[in-house]
Length: 349
Image 1 (cartoon, rainbow, N blue to C red):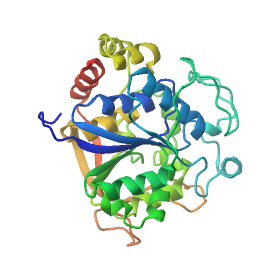
Image 2 (spheres, one colour):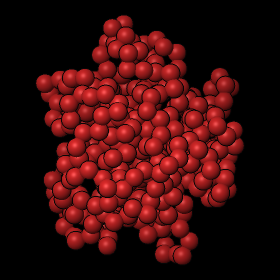
Image 3 (tube, rainbow, N blue to C red):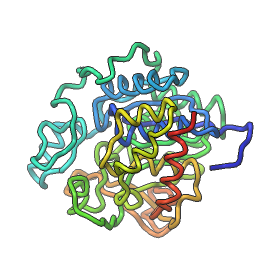
Image 4 (cartoon, helix red, strand yellow):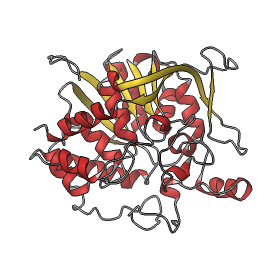
């Protein structure tokens, strides 16, 4: 991490904060625990869970670690164009998607993910640690995002780790939203992930290596976000994350301290899961973590055929010229350095 300084980087986390544990919330813990970061807020879309359910999980996380100073801002319940019904129709034409987040009406036999039964968007199942006592911000995520980057022009980095509906809406609400930000770091897209073992998580991309959930859930939003006019974009795709895993040993090391974050991890750690979003958070905190990067022109397919939501890439400047940006893609990370960072942050008081 960066050297000690009184200066703190300002960050807004846009995340589908489904919990009570797992990659979504563990990545937020990492950023909150960093001494170099001021989190201005957490904006929440639907993704792994419905928006209202995700908001409740984010609020309860902040209560349990004593960080209710950070606002949780409700965002989009539904994608811009894609829908649950449209996805099921697409599946009848092009084959099943192994993972659909909040739209998973039933789980295959191989599933080991424990989550509430399928429910509607306005249902918030009870939280295992008790329902939150605090309330979300009385603002819409897109408005909050646009307002904050104008309040601190050139100083706010957006860390996006869920579907990108909120960011697309902010970009449409304020055409200078992205230009006012310091930059964007996002977890999403997929190029050619090479896996060390086939498991239930790799089934998301094993036969469709260019399809990744955050982009596939709301492809139009992903494309709008990319084309919004950022000063710089760092993409952390599946390729850099698929062979990471929160092992029991790593979880035990990270939760061995007496910090609120360590106690939360000891209770709700997503053991056995790849550390998708934690890698994106770590790259935000220390770009030296990346051991292999490359520049590509990037977009997401929005035609509604078999490739809907797939990652499109070209050499820098070599795309069709429709606004696709050149993006710095993290291909691989230093796993040992990442694990040391994760442990240190979780144990930090």
